[in-house]
Amino acid sequence: MTNRTARRLLGGLAVAVAIVWAFPIYWMVNSSLLPNTTLQSFVPTFVPFGGSLGNFREALADGSFYAALGMSVSITLIAVFFCILFAFLAAVAISRFRFRGRKSFVIAVLIVQMLPAEGLFIAQYKMVSSAGLLDSVIGVSIIYVAAVVPFTVWMLRGFVAGIPVDLEEAAMVDGLSRFGAFMRITFPLLAPGLVASGVYAFLQAWNEFTVALVLLPSEAAQTLPLWLRGFVQASATRETDWGQVMAASTLVAVPVIVFFLIVQGRLTSGLVSGAVKG
Image (tube, rainbow, N blue to C red; front, side):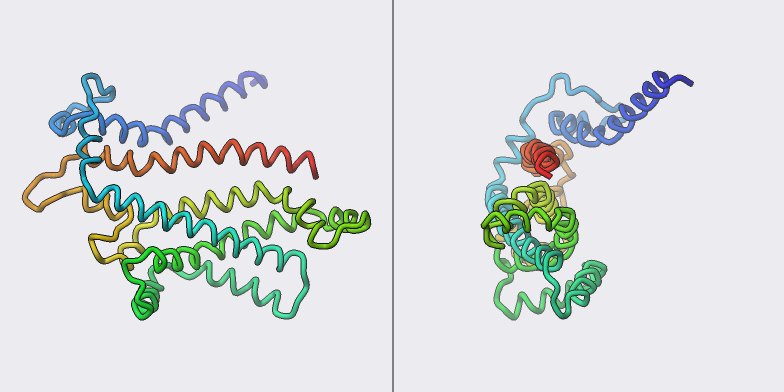
């Protein structure tokens, strides 16, 4: 087998995997453009000829959508900001400094990451309830930050440890302080790690369902995943309108796709820039 044939086979395999991966997304968007009667047919419709945006209009007409959107945006922004801030400080501390209890702290971070989220629901509910933060942005954001920070610490620790200390020492020899050397030399090289951590925190906070279900019991305060669950079937006597459900799912997924497309370019440029500067 020649190299060209092998490359073609691998390329074909990659295309096949990409199609399998992207098909559920295509099916969701395709179904969102079709009426419910067409979706209930035994013959699948792969191309939405004659489709319309009626399902999207029905989903957007639900007044609770905008309240849920505001709740999700607020919680996600708060969680991403504080996750990056706390994880960045912790990663720098355990990578650049030697202090008593450093190894114990690293082990504790690893153990916390290994705990199942379901085993913490009762304790989290009791804690948030006793603080009077149920059905609030702050209460859910605190739990999200606590859940995401351990992994982001490990992620950023690898980026910080991968930057040689010699770069900072050389800058300090040239007259910069330790803080100035870190901010002017090391911090720009950490941009890919900060962006990657932000993407992870964003996805976890935006798509999280179970914690929000426990800490947001009121129907007046719900995130988009909770709104989507309630949108699946508006009443017990009416059958599920899968066209509207798929339209609502697309509306929930669009911000994630747009955010990732924007950050992907910055992440790529940051990686290239970091490689050149290193």
